[in-house]
Length: 385
Image (cartoon, rainbow, N blue to C red; front, side, top):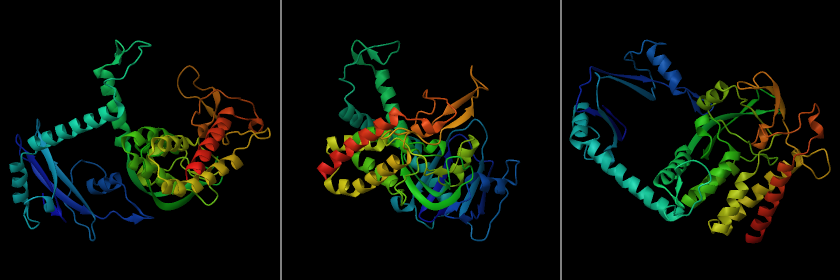
């Protein structure tokens, strides 16, 4: 295929030749920093259906859509290469690029790289977690533990779990919505802004609550990345000390959230368990947090915890209660159709709590425990910084 800037996208099949290749160029309009999502551009390109791309070129195009028709069965290599890292000149025509991809034998080269990366990943994993020599106790049915040792199956599961966390690390950019209260379904558009996070991207709503648990793992794998993720979340702190519990940025993420019938706006009346403080405490004990880093993050963490303590007060003096509890109707299962009470902000929305009619008299021991744990961590940070 033709080169774009300093890069070339090539396709080569050793079993089939393309029936047809079509390229169309469209302009994705900018809106508050968000570009039209890929689905909308495809709808325009395909004319609402039919599956056949019409060749088209818009003025000021910034998106290229390529449709390649191939007979089945087929085996295809897609090669995205940089002219700077290859011997293909930037002025090469399409035929020369495709031929260069064919001569490259991408399948062998990719297999070699994949094997090298897999071996390097396994070596690093074993060096950090040492599961091969770890002892375990078989408590129930399963094949992860046998004869006091973690089996190969158990080790593969552990690697898959780590890969799941690493694979979700993403940078998103766009606007988000702030609600005037916990029950505001519309909110006001804010932004755009960017966020580097490791938890919740696949749902379209990165979660600050889940981020803390991911950081507990990532701080062992790569402390520098863990620090970047933590700083990215702390950079979203608002003037009153509030940090949005979830940040769905951009139109594509918004659609995924609303498709699940979940609320998009975030309200500063709601808090979330400060799990990232537990991760920071572990980083401190690990020696992965320098004094300059601690001096940078501590003021933000103090401001955030103060906001939680102000906004989540309980009915009894010195107690705390999660705000924004709601009555909802159960969907599916034995209790389908029955009314229940959720506490989404606690991170344990289905945890049994009072179902009285007056939520203002509530006090929640789990939130008090979070506050106590957070004060303990801040005291350690103050002593270390």
